[in-house]
Image (cartoon, rainbow, N blue to C red; front, side):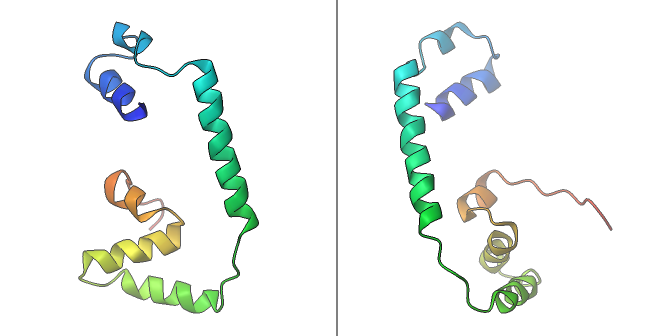
Length: 98
């Protein structure tokens, strides 16, 4: 649903009439949000400690120089905390400092 609505907004405009018909009801949005919040709460309760986090970061930094795109993507996932699917499909990186 979100992807369809985004495509309509991108192709046409934010107030296109079709958006009045392609949407969830308030109850449906509430159910979806409740489900997502429960999932996040469960995930937060099942956190596992990392052994040797400095070593993991050092390996990720080293992998940034790899000629293999998959290793660079793995390194970016570790260093940014983003999902690999996010990095590979929607991420945009801009230099902030030298």
